[in-house]
Image (tube, rainbow, N blue to C red; front, side, top):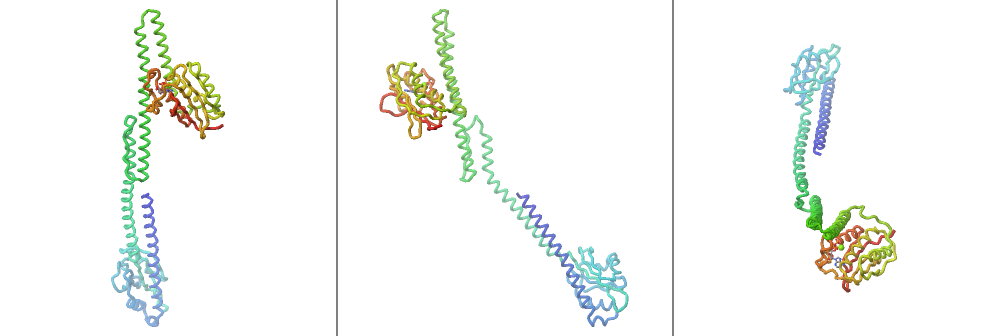
Length: 447
Ligand SMILES: Nc1ncnc2c1ncn2[C@@H]1O[C@H](COP(=O)(O)OP(=O)(O)OP(=O)(O)O)[C@@H](O)[C@H]1O
Ligand SMILES: [Mg+2]
């Protein structure tokens, strides 16, 4: 940016210099033509024609004409410098023998450029002829071009200096401004560098309301989410490890204490198999949960809601002696993952079985309501205390009732993951009747 400015500045100064220099050349030329015309005019006056010799004519002219500050006149007679004009010229060319030799023989008006101690000069040699005599004298007019150019050059130089100062000030201003603008970004970068998986607590200081502050705020919110995600994951891994350790300890304890008695062996075998199947189920559940964030978690297709509900009840019936019911079902086909929905309802049904007694009622149903699909499992069991209604959906969380030891507390998290993957929710519904009622709501998507 500054480079472009500097280049532009140099070009402006260069072009100005060139233009002014060309003008100075032209003005030296103009002065010279003017003096030549004046001399020609003088030579034809009666006063001048009366004179007999070129010496007289030239002397007369020198007397009548004063050179400007940037001019000099002198005359040459018989090839040698003769008289000089009045005043002190900026540089003496009449003493430059090489120059005199070059111009002395001119019999025709001659113009040219030469160098002097006062810089470049534009000169004109005007031969003088009196009557029919051959030419033996010349008037030399010198225009000191560099002196004429002086004011223009000064102006160009001033322009260059002012330009350079402006550029320097602009550079300083740029540096200060970019420094101020970039400071928060630099801080952002260094904080981002310091943040690692092990220390996600750092945050960027947010100052002001500009775009950079907004960026910092967005960055901080992202860190909040990341930190929460890491914490949940760590907790999840801790819990999973802890939960899996229990059956392993139980199995090891029984195997170590197993005697040679065949009855005892039979008993231990049954217990070990039972614990293993519990572990197996838990690992399966953990895998489902781990997969639930992935896009291929669901395989959507057409789901007939009536078939779904009836099949779930049919599958659940052999689980336990209960009054199994289909409350009501919606006569509709929606787009969803039928297998995952069955899995969710089976988890709810398994919970209902666990929290009811023989002869209790367990009902499953579906309904279309406000553009949503409503699925439920209701039972007439012990019910869920209001205080637990939300937290039981978290992983590894179980209620405080006597049956808590049986499960790992993963069932409802799986139900929630399935509901959320469909863009829906699951909750414990409030109801007047005793028992618990779990409701799954999904957006109604028609094929
Ligand atoms: N139908 C219900 N009636 C009363 N309480 C229930 C019912 N369903 C769930 N709960 C409570 O919610 C808790 C969490 O249920 P969740 O299904 O997540 O775990 P779990 O059944 O204990 O274990 P898992 O499902 O992993 O075998 C249960 O421990 C229980 O206290
Ligand atoms: Mg359960």
